[in-house]
Length: 152
Figure (spheres, rainbow, N blue to C red):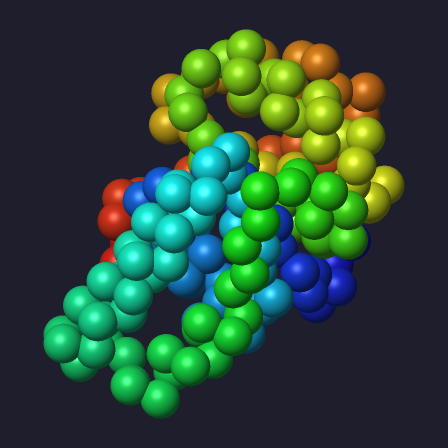
């Protein structure tokens, strides 16, 4: 897959990192879908994206007119099946090896055969996280700095 082939990005994890990563890609015009395990986490992600947008506007780093497109480009879901048509899937979930491994094993069954898998881990082994995958060649580390909307 080439960079220009990436149109839709899935993000697992609606916390600070996942929300910031979603904001970055949505701002660049990508279709983004954010998932998490509870509706309250998704609602918090929407709130965080609004805070990130406001802070960028206040600092003169973003125009007010960009907010509508960012909001339009981000969808939220509790169902991992939304990853089925994503070109790039970025995981920013809890830093626990077994949870990350199980997540990727499940996503591999759902995702397109050419989708790229990326973890945002800050301290776990990339090889360890991908251990349960059938096709490890599509798995990468993609670490974003915190806060990602400021320091991607």
